[in-house]
Length: 94
Image 1: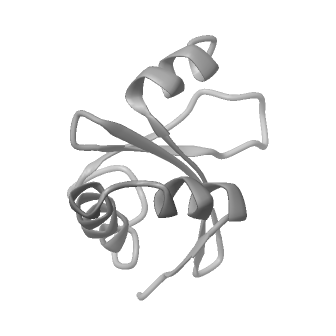
Image 2: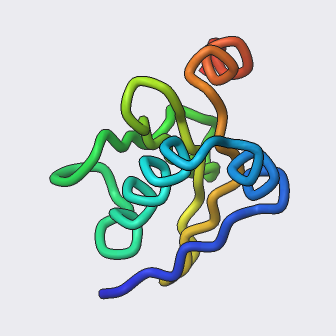
C-alpha cells in the first residue's frame, strides 16, 4: 500500500527555513512514510502513549530532528517537525 504524505503548514514553514542538507535528510526520512508509516521495520518510528483514541506517531530523523504525524486511511499527516531539543521540551510529558 502506498501512503500519501501531507505536511502541515507549520511543519512546512519550519522545513522551508532549513539549510539544503537538513532538507535532504528530512525528505529522505519522510519518504519512508510513503510505504511504511507504522512502527516496525524501517526508520525509528514509535506510537506515542497518549489518552485512549489518540494515535500520534513520532519519527526520529537522524539525531537532529523529530517529526510527529497521524495516519488516516492511506494519508499520513505530518503535524510538526522540530529539532530534538524542541521536541524534548515540548513533549517531555509524553
